[in-house]
Amino acid sequence: MPTLVGLGNALGADGLPVRLSSRTYAGLRQRPVRELGFDQPLLWVVVALLAWGLVMVYSASIALPDNPRFANYAQTHFALRHGLFIAIGLVAALIAFQVPMQTWERYAPLLFALALLLLVVVLIPFIGKGVNGARRWIPLGVINFQPSELAKLTILLYAADYMVRKMDVKERFFRAVAPMAVALAVVGMLLLAEPDMGAFMVIVVIAMGILFLGGVNARMFFLIVLVVVTAFALMVMMSEWRRERIFAYLDPWSEQYALGKGYQLSHSLIAFGRGEIFGVGLGGSVEKLHWLPEAHTDFLLAVVGEEFGLIGVTIIIASFLWLVRRIVLIGRQAIALDQVFAGLVAQGVGLWIGFQAFINIGVNLGALPTKGLTLPLMSYGGSAILLELVALAIVLRVDHENRLLMKGGRS
Image: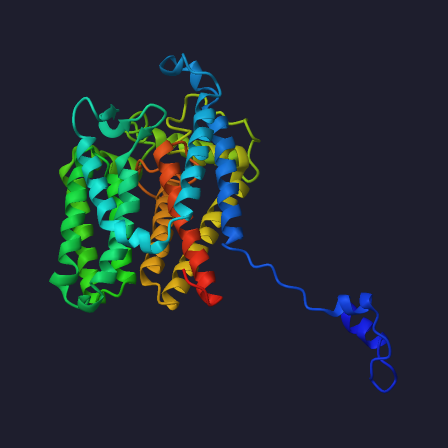
């Protein structure tokens, strides 16, 4: 309206310009619109979750040095290490953003082979590090690297590349699906040997989701789902400690499980109960004081619920919903621009972040059986933060190339 009024004042009664000074003309000229090279709202939501996660890791781990197991650690030990992991992840993400999607597509099979090799190496005694009966980490000095996290990213890249290569035979079950099923079976055997069933579940969901989004016949897809669900059910039935987890989930307050398999869940629910709507305030959690195990990793959301209440938990859930939706839209846009590999990769990252957040939130709230999966971008964990930031940098690269193509440039 100010521009129109100014233009009206500059016109005579007959509508002809009477006088246009250089200042008036400058105010009427079109100004170039500054176009952003990537999705900045997505970046800022990720930064906000990282920052909140860092604060909560410090809050949840501040009392750990009181435990004889961590007696030699400073109160800031886990927070400083988590900050270091974030810094390393941001540098890796910046490097990953510079890599064109064509390069990721070209090297996807090699990266997947590297992940398989590391999954074998971690099982070798004196190389893989065991914690609580699980051998999942390779010590690398500053960080204990977890190959299963790399496997999530590489299976995503490999599955997207595989679907692009098999696009002409995607209606044929054995030619389109069977090779991918063999790859998943090999990954599954290596992960279950660690054991790490949670990571295997995420990898299966990523691969199956990309197969479905890539256009595999719906009947074949539901057949695969049936086979996978049956396989997981058999794994639970054949493992006594997995069965006990299910029973503890169904009744965590029973005398049999309250101090055993249901201990974490029961204290997680107590934390949410104490938080009520607005929480007890940052730093005021009682459950983190050696009552709730793994409060800074798998059960970080319970500490959020106790200190920030229903409001804080709702904000986190809404943030992940927005984030996943944004990522999926970027993937859809890439496919619409005929960048199928890039689109499938972006949507696969959305499946990864969304499914893992869904499982972690469900476990913390008692809606799902206890499973060792961290809350993406927030829970303590070096390898997880590193690979999640690299994956999100790839999504931003997809969005960057989408914008270049829509402007008529080349990706």
